[in-house]
Length: 45
Image (cartoon, rainbow, N blue to C red; front, side, top):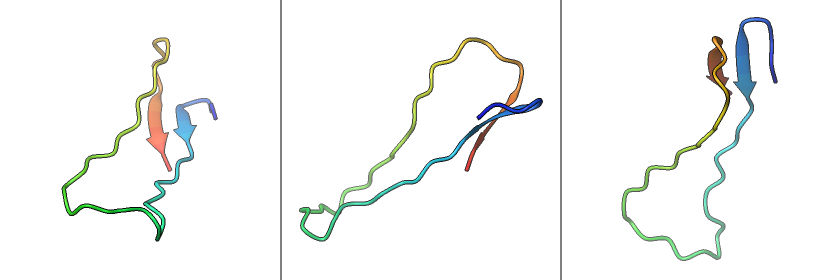
């Protein structure tokens, strides 16, 4: 949501379920957001 001084993203990182095969490799989850230029702070919660 957008406020007067920031854009907020409410996120949840959900891991694999008990039934998923999990490897022991290192992963780097990330989020990509494409926006027009807005001179405000970006906050992930």
